Image (tube, rainbow, N blue to C red; front, side, top):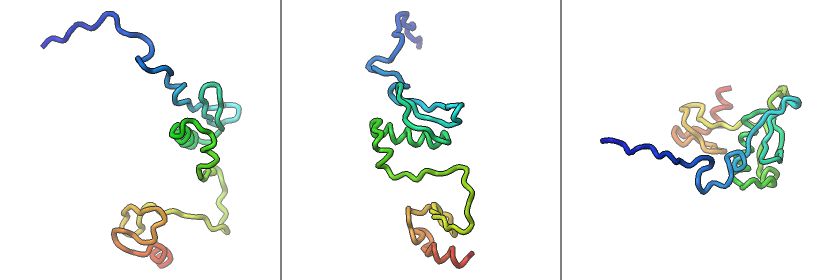
Amino acid sequence: MELPPFPEKRPKGRIKGMKVNKKEREGEILFDHKLRKFYIQKGKDIIDYYDTMTEAFYYKKILMDNNWDETILKTNVCEKIEVNIVIDPTKEYEVKLNFCPRCKSRLEINATECPSCGINIEEYLSNNN
């Protein structure tokens, strides 16, 4: 089977129906060398500065899901993670387990018992430490 000849006059530039390019539609994550921080830029607007690229990508994703409404960053409950913190041994930190410490099956958020093996997670951790 022979393929038809490649068309000589093919369209150039943007895809039909696309009015904006990817940078205008999705914004971009850039790095400011003077501040040594990542930032989100959409058009000429700079949204905010972040310590890590992962953090900037996370907030960019939230903004894209909400049609670039910046108020969502204030209303959306997000715990900002400090990268270079010193752990205080006298302070008690909140720990969230994703997996059962005994059978290693996935746990739901704020689960008190494992759905697979049925152990009480708090009792198991306090008895084994």
